[in-house]
Amino acid sequence: MYSYNPKSKCADEFINHEEIQETLQYARENRHNRELIQEILEKAKQRKGLSHREAAVLLDCDLEDKNQEIFALAEQIKKDFYGSRIVMFAPLYLSNYCVNGCVYCPYHAKNRHIARKKLTQEEIRREVIALQDMGHKRLALETGEDPVNCPIDYVLESIKTIYSIKHKNGAIRRVNVNIAATTVENYRKLKEAGIGTYILFQETYHKESYLKLHPTGPKHDYNYHTEAMDRAMEGGIDDVGCGVLFGLELYRYEFAGLLMHAEHLEAVYGVGPHTISVPRIKRADDIDPGVFDNGIDDDTFAKIVACIRIAVPYTGMIISTRESKECRERVLHLGISQISGGSRTSVGGYAEEEPEEECSEQFDVSDKRTLDQVVNWLMGMGYIPSFCTACYREGRTGDRFMSLCKSGQIENCCLPNALMTLKEYLMDYASEDTRKKGEELIEKEIGSIPKEKVREIVKDRLLQIQQGNRDFRF
Ligand code: SAM
Image 1 (cartoon, helix red, strand yellow):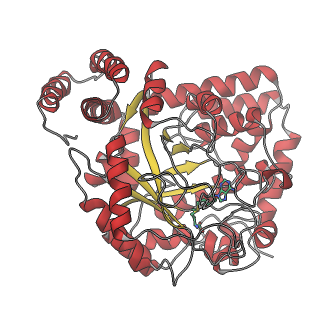
Image 2 (cartoon, protein in one colour):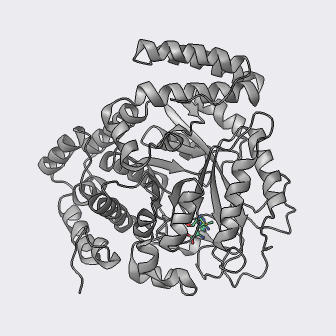
Image 3 (cartoon, protein in one colour):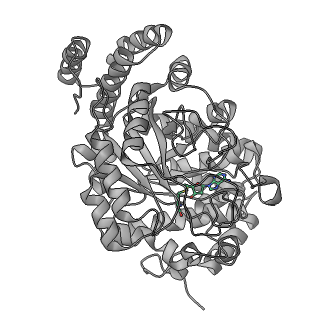
């Protein structure tokens, strides 16, 4: 029997089953404990986050008025830390060869009817040009796990190719990587290749379920998978992105597990996850989401997003095009700080639409709008779509990024970067209507930059962007 220890590097101790069970019981017993819930909300208002136990009580709270307070606080924290900026990205699928047996994923090794594809460097070039022509500056690389067909050297070579392509005014300035758990040595190589965030979804923190959901292949090793972020940190990657696939297990369990993972990284490395993603299972080639019993409805989903926002205020939150426009709209103001747009989840889907019979897609996309439509929609709601990639290029990763958040300097740094990269987008890629809306938004938002000196520099740089110069950043 293992005991709970956030400082341990053993998965069974930092994600401890008994501790989660006790947390869920504690939350259940206190779900209408008005006094305790008020106390937790008071602590949350200090914006220093909550423990997994405290956050679990808020998630379970069933007092209507307190739930309203939870949503209002999440919204306020979102505004205080991220203003109205929303960072844009797109996934790029390099290969769907996979040796694992994940029961929820159509890439599983036994699926004989999806087309298996792996992009050549020339095909990557075409994909990247298509993505640059949409206006993207930040990518998340995705692959299945296959040491023979998709070895680390291929991923490294692909990253090099991606960074080298400069088509017209386009450039991919930040490549995040979502590949299977790997060794410290490989994480070091990824770091040297200049990746932004290393993303790995836990899928589920419930070990017994995890073993059943991943019956075969290297991913079956729960501890190796769960300890991946530790190895990434040891390999020098200090921006890591966590997430669970909601629908596989009880959401309360996953919520507690996610926060315990964040607490563990903070306790051992002094920095929690850079981002948390909140994917839900979707229909895919031979996958029917209906067979998983733990699907969550949109109300529960919104509550989860709000409670994560309150529990880890400095951690970015990502939502993908797995979710519909309506669902994305609902959770944006509750805590989401990054969204994808114009995404394709097939291998090679950007340069050319995939013929239906080939179907290399990982899952059905719900939000099928173009990037321009997403940008336009965001601005219509008062958000500033940001194509900023400055932090990691300026060495502000890990705790240096966190201290930028904590210092309150974000409005003098992130806001200008957001406005300047939006201006680039408007000049190079936007439709007429989007450009008009964007120019008005920039004009209005310049006034929100607190320091006058910074404001003046931004005005000057916006003018320079208008004249054809690119890539300014603070
Ligand atoms: N293969 C890598 C690994 O082993 O972690 C990760 C890359 S995979 C392309 C990205 C993520 O897609 C997975 O971690 C999983 O959570 C998610 N995913 C798989 N099947 C899905 C489905 N049917 N619906 C929604 N998301 C899915």
